[in-house]
Length: 172
Image (tube, rainbow, N blue to C red):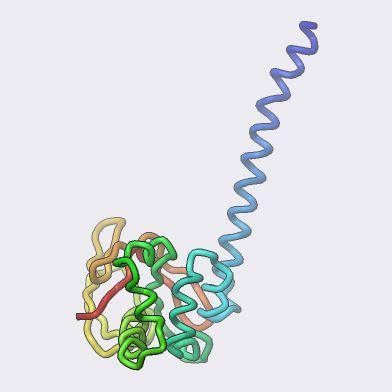
């Protein structure tokens, strides 16, 4: 009985370590898949389940072409969770077939896109694809863009970079 108990107690830490290493390997593989520099911005975002609402909006707005073209872009990508913090019905209104709503959707989606690759190392101001300027505030170890905190940065793609933000950026 003592031998069985002793074997179980020495085996348990090995199992825990093995599971932890396996989980770390899976997480690393997921991150590598998301950051595959041979994929374009659209493909990288599609491989990451956090952006399905954004991708629906991008498609509805007709702005998927820049994300899969040869030009370099930066995409400030709000997560599905970020879209969930909008006023109730706001996203549905933007996604409706009404012309004014569609125009607003295009404005909002294009406000998340910038031509060229934007670094978050220094504070700066960038001009969005929508046409207005947006401030980037870089502090030690953190950055914000407009009213959103950057929660993950520098997800690489063949035609640019994705910075994950915690809020939907809404132009004035």
